[in-house]
Length: 117
Image (cartoon, rainbow, N blue to C red; front, side, top):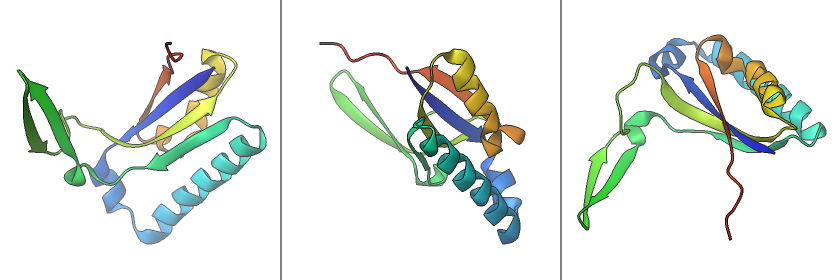
């Protein structure tokens, strides 16, 4: 079964890290991805640009409105995601716990719905 692991953390916390600290965390991500790829569990994933680059689109009553930034103001922001193959929720949660940002943020684990039709 596929699971989407949504990676949340405070952008300001990441921005305060110096380059060597950021590079250490990036290496931890590369190592984890390589391990998951070797096991056939990593299906994809990306880091996202900061929320300052986001645009939110809404359509209400046939009219489109566009606003800068994310939909909601929250303490933690969505910073990236992994799409993984796991046998069950327990395995998906175990993978989520290995994501470096879980140490300072949170990882939301969501099963991917099967395609309809």
